[in-house]
Image (cartoon, rainbow, N blue to C red; front, side, top):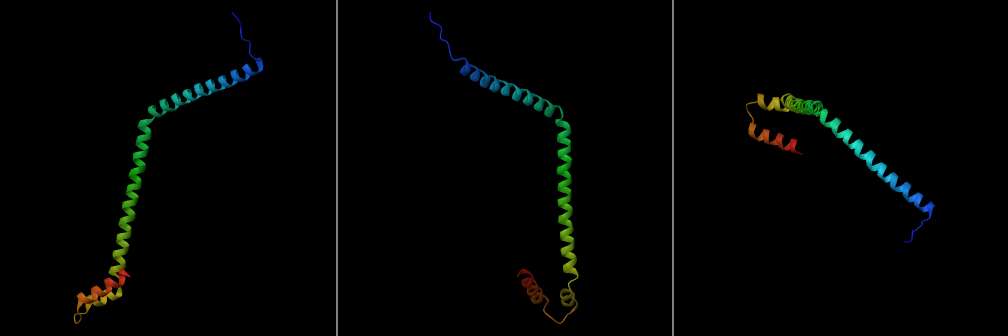
Length: 106
C-alpha cells in the first residue's frame, strides 16, 4: 500500500479555506438563532408598537383628509360670486352654477 504525500503548503491553504468556511457557517447559524430567538421573545412588544404606529398614521391621514375637506368647503362657502348668485333672485341660478362649475373644472 502506497501513501500519497501532498504538498504541505497547498494542504495548509485548503485547510485554512475550509476552516474559514466552516467557521463562517457556524457564526452565521449562531447569529441567526440569537436573532430569531430575540425576535420571538419580543414579538408582543414589536407587534404592539407597530399597531400603535399604524393607528397613529391612519388617524393622521383621516385628520388631514377632514382638514382638506373643511378648507375646501370653507373656500367655496366664502366665494363672493357664489354668495352673489345665491342672494339674487332675478337670474337663472342653475345656469350660473353650471358656469361656475365649468370654470372650476378648467
